Amino acid sequence: MPAGLAAARGLEPADAVFSGAAVFNPFACTWERVDFAVKNGYVVGFGGYQGKREYDLAGTYVVPGLIDAHVHIESSLLAPAEYARLVLARGTTTVIADPHEIANVCGAPGIEYMLAEGAGTPLDILVMLPSCVPATPLDMGGARLTAGDLARFRGRKGVIGLAEVMNVPGVLAGDEDLRAKMDLFSVIDGHAPFLNGKDLNAYIYAGVQSDHECTTLSEAREKLLRGMYILIREGSTERNLRDLLPLVNACTASRCCFATDDRHADMLAGEGHIDDCVRKAVASGLEIELALRMATLSAAGRFGLHDRGALAPGRLADFCVIDDPDRFEVRRTFKRGIEVVDAGYRQPACPAAPLHVRVPEPRDIRLTGRGDARVIGIVPGQITTRDLRCPVDAADIPDTGRDILKAVVTDRYRAGGSGVGLVHGFGLQEGAIAGSVSHDSHNIVATGVGDADIIRAIGEVARLGGGLAVVSGDDVTVLPLECGGLMSALPHDEVVRRLAALEEHARRLGAVENPFMYLSFLALTVIPDLRVTERGVFDVGIFSDVLLFCE
Image 1 (tube, rainbow, N blue to C red):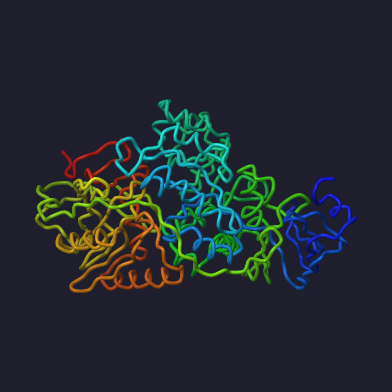
Image 2 (cartoon, rainbow, N blue to C red):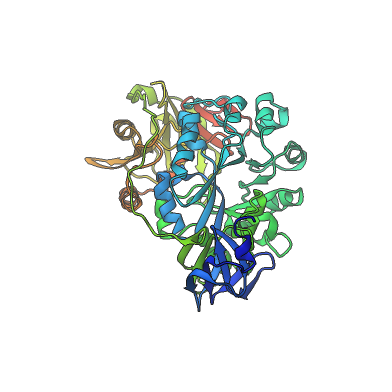
């Protein structure tokens, strides 16, 4: 007799029975006050059962475990176990993780690291293999992954598909290696900001099934109508939830999920995780039942995870307990029917990813010329940028009056050179900031007022072997990121404390809120419009390096 079948029939005791709560049913988007029984980590049935352990949840509400449909754990700045401690307490029991950050730094060993670390936590970290390492053929990171490299991971426990296919031109041109990667998996995530019309048709025809880069309602609606799943994102700087939420109704909720993509540890600790998305959705007018549907069964269905997303016979007994659906504050989390108890901090392993940095000298980042310049315009609440054309005399930079500063990217892998661009929107009036988190190649990126401070900030990051730094005068504030230059080996509460110190220092210098998250995306060459790399200015629209000054 299959394990649990006798318990489901009531012929033997279940491991646990949970009684008295109103249970959310995402199949019907209703609440049902009913007892349920668990055996071997799975729900076996509802109604009158006997259990070896009995939990009285009277007066509370039970919701299936929350699922993040797309996240880069590295962006939290936490090692996987510390990330898990934070999000489990928020009711999340499964995350769909793309480890392309650590893969860009150290290749296949980075993926192995994330799989091994994920196996040591109660959180289910399910991996979508990175499709574009490097992000574009022009990018020079720490590794290059071919279809053959990814094929080694196919069939591995915890590997479920191919992550965001960022090389849209490659898809549309029929790039052979990219096609070979897509042929490895039946579940394929997309990454196609602003793509529409016939090119969108072709992108979907090629096999891409979802997108998390929508920033406008019209963009999301077109992609949904053409058959895509829409992963509504709410990260530290990618705040798209309120703009996209009108897309969701009773008919479309099954095709919409929540994703955090990139959230620093301080946002996870302060605002929350998928629970935060639920609260914001309800505050914006969405029915709680539809929000919960998106946070549970919709995400499970999108990835073919038929063993979770709902509390039903044969599905995992993953759930959280709340007092009030409208407030949605998680009180307890259960994984496979067992309450998650914080086991405390444990020192993480860190992958080998040394930095080989030649800290620039003043002549390396000196600008000359005058005329109309391509200035990267930061867009508040987004990771897209604007291509600003501003009259500039290089001798007048930094121009704090117009908030035009140098942005510098320094090769971290081969002791190579530094590229220089101009950026508007950071607000700094003095000092500089720098970091080794620089999507996706993760070279060292910096901006600031004056070359000496920029060089000093880059030097601090190099001295740390990876990290974040703010410098001004004699003051230096840092957060070491020992794990690949991306993640800290510290406990999450200490990372949050140090992030607060970095933010406060930067704020005193005039910086925008979340300056390090904006900084980390300055070099991301697959998000429009302008970027800066170790080579100089990059125009995403034409997928090419361009001159700083317009010809």
